Image 1: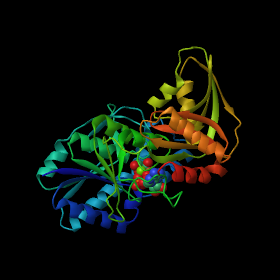
Image 2: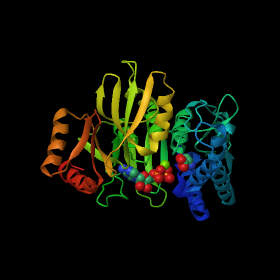
Image 3: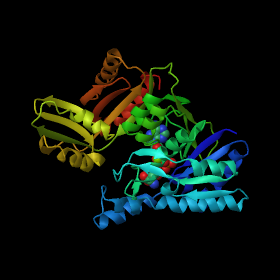
Image 4: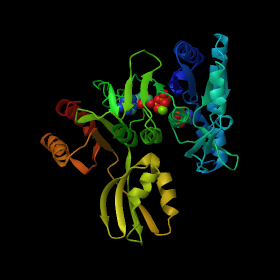
Length: 387
Ligand code: ADP
Ligand code: ASP
Ligand code: MG
């Protein structure tokens, strides 16, 4: 029988009623497929634990922090297992270490190194639904680790790869990937298909619907993902290696940017590549010998400072004053050329939208602009770029 991994995010398991509903989805799908479920903490729970940890000065990097913030997933896995057993479906819960999901010791955003699949396979052979806590792993020091915010997506994709599942379903509160966050722009359109690299770009540049690391893993291992809603049955969006026929696919937004200037004493230091390895994207404003100036998502400020200050060659980091209300708009598409970039810039200038900084990659065009012009820009791009 074919096998599918189904991951249920925080809003999908936010209440006991929602957990019972998720149990119904699993029960229905189990009729013709083997199901492995991966669950997040109930909505808001991880945020609460992070608040608790912070108020006692527990921060990312400390294994106790991971121990605290990983605990929400345990409750959901247990509850879903009970709900399924109540329906007469055999199920059992697994903490990350019980699987086991072996990770690096990079507490707060650990990498998955290997997964033991014997327990899962044995459950499937015995008609049992394994319910795995997302977001959690265990390192060689026998400490619990976490996989970064939104890390249950990564758990699901990595499990799908390990057990050779036919697809990894990510259930959320949206019925697919849209041209832009549908909670931000009501005319956003749902996409049927998105190419891996486009999704990676979207996730990296602010679309929260999938965790960036999970998309990078799916791309590397060629795992097909379906983003769907646990609230309505509606097909969803497939993320795969199918080459798109259209040019542009969507827009990702990052609000609340900060500007940093970094001074260093080794000319060959490549700060952009270094930060990318940590899944941090920056918009470069200027690089001159021994100095780089860039825009950054304010949420990543502390982690970036921490990474940079560990480098011997970094001498000083300065936070610049920028206009408080700047956002980054990233237009994502396939195989973007210089002429596409010029077209987008001309659209902005003919509509009197000032761009403070811009850059172009193969799959994305990034524009930093005043937040007050954001909706106008989103609208113009939808009307002129086939979104
Ligand atoms: P979960 O808790 O299920 O993991 P998330 O909150 O992480 O769900 O992701 C779903 C949210 O992603 C949606 O509520 C939506 O606001 C946001 N989102 C951002 N960009 C997009 C997009 N392009 N398409 C769909 N949803 C998006
Ligand atoms: N509960 C974790 C978080 O809120 C992991 C996840 O939801 O995917 O980040
Ligand atoms: Mg999520």
